[in-house]
Amino acid sequence: MPQAPLEVFPLVLVVAKKPTPTPFGRRLRQMREAAGLSLMQLGEMTGMNWTAIRRLELSPAANPTLATLQKLATALNCTPADLIPSQSD
Image (cartoon, rainbow, N blue to C red; front, side, top):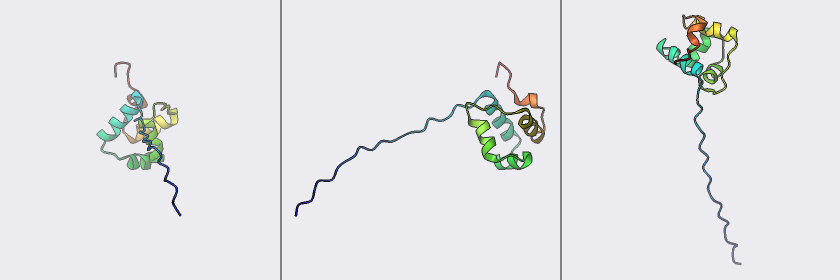
């Protein structure tokens, strides 16, 4: 008995677009790395989940609360204002 021919489906490759972080996210990552901290270490110091910090660093919609800014600033030994980039950054 002859077999039916196999159907061929085209392969579609989806490439995820790399997120564009906000100036705040770039500043946060810069300060975390300058302090020599991993995401997990900063998470432990702030009581935040490391994935939440990662989202703040990478998300184009990062919008931390004042309480979050304070936690991050305390852990990074800076002021909350230091985490907010100026217009020229």
